[in-house]
Length: 591
Image 1 (spheres, one colour):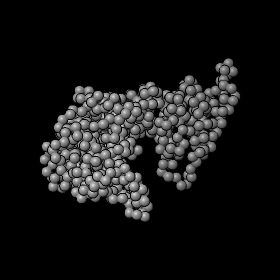
Image 2 (cartoon, one colour):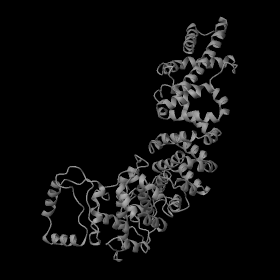
Image 3 (cartoon, one colour):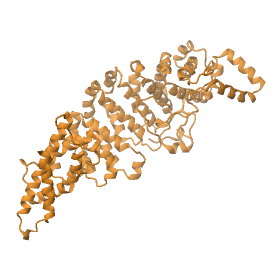
């Protein structure tokens, strides 16, 4: 989604105010306004500042924890210090005359350090400034408290922010002319003189919004914000604001509030919140969409999740969500949208309500398209979004474990072509980090796609690729389980297979070439057959079937080649000896 010129100065992304708009990401929907475009209006303030071009070139980074509170920094970064709770002085300068406190650092220094800093600052202060400070202290709340003398532990942020300051911040977010103004006039001694210019209002709105975004990461502060009608204010902004930046900040604050387990239920039951948030999915701004998906994921973890799921049921909404997943080039938006679907999968009541409707509007097609596009990217393009392929494949693992989804996947020739080509890839160094997921997906699909077995059972390079994965996943129990579960399905069986001489040669060559890998894996995973877990028992059964298949091929091949005349150019003695060695190992392992 491209950012418009009105969003940035010289192409930079918004800095201290929060996540910048991604210039490189294509717009999810081409017809509305470009991502990040802002329309100035009395009730829709836009971002007052933009970062330098260096910030824009840095790009958005991945959040460390998708469902943990985050600040308004660039896509997962911690917020810049000029608006974070640790340095609120910039906002406080405008607040002194309105009853708000100035600022204090979360990591409050010891009293000794505070006194030394105060002495240095007072050295430059005039007598007149000191008199004005005394007068301010009489009319406004006292300065935020510092650590008591002699106390080494840092104060919790809940104790370093005056409650009236938080209320004043919330009040600054009320859209001009809203009926909420009177409600807050009763709660706060601060008031708006009504004479501030539109530009001043915009600057003040973003500064206060970003501070609240930070404070919402603290559970005590989040509780205080909710008790003082912050949800009503945020919803009012989402309904009337035209600015993408305003919407992003509102969604970011709500996302942080919803990350607190003790509060999420109350938040999700707020009147009008569900519909208002879902409507934001039709915006064309990657930052707003990322925050909307983050909030939706948090909402689906609450007790009211079924109510949210019902709002998502219309085809138009589900199609929009899946379209975003399948078409965004922004890593953070892809991550948040995939995390949302993963949350749907994990919630039993929600998946029961949404999975069939999502399949109906093309869930599998969108995900297959996403995988195919990622695979076909050039090395340079892949560097722009590192980790995307791994995330997509793990997402497909989750989907393939659902019976109804696996059935649809098994009918996708396009998907099987991509997965098989990854197994057969000669570049195992690049493929190693993904092969475990690919094997698991194939194993799950074959459970519901038995019609695929004949095709795969004649693809010897595919079988060879599976054997090559054995040393890649020795410590990944799930991948090894899936691998040994797949091999017996596609290897030749004595009672079913009649092979001609050519096929026999090909299978014998495959087993002779890969047997060291098979042997090494079996000998490094010896189990106590008298105390087997259910998983070990299954793997033991599958490996036994594979060894019987290999024995069957070796016996027939030795018999055929040993009976050939010299004129038929039989293989060397060493080749037959190697086959006999493989056969002997199989017999011992099976008995």
